[in-house]
Length: 125
Figure 1 (cartoon, rainbow, N blue to C red):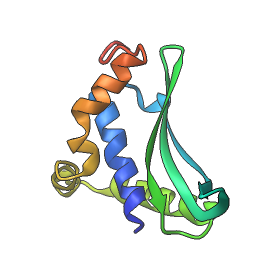
Figure 2: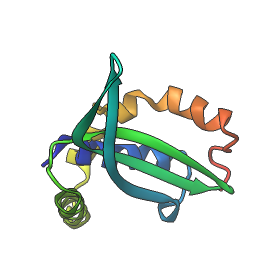
Figure 3: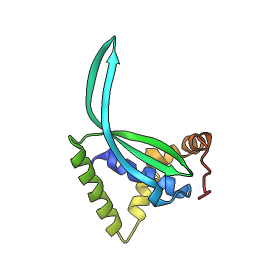
Figure 4: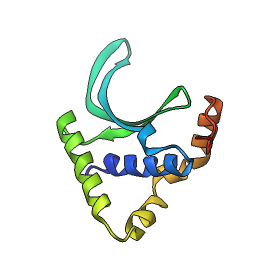
């Protein structure tokens, strides 16, 4: 499993704990684009995975990371497999243990500040 896909799930859990409804959280994949170094443009052949929050008449994009998978279709397939796996688990202890060690969990305070700065009310849905 691509680690950035798992991290997206942890990021989603952070947002859910902040009180944002699941229906306001979206999985988004985009091309990394171009990087310019010393006036020369280089295409980055990687895909960016983001969590998009559409709530309270605002949008917030949390860039999770670069995927190791070669195509958007494969990233989406990996995301769906992850959802199926975790939705079928009866015991959430494995997920919760990994969640508490995740980068997303460690970013809770700066994320809360960023959401507040953008005008979001945490727990206000």
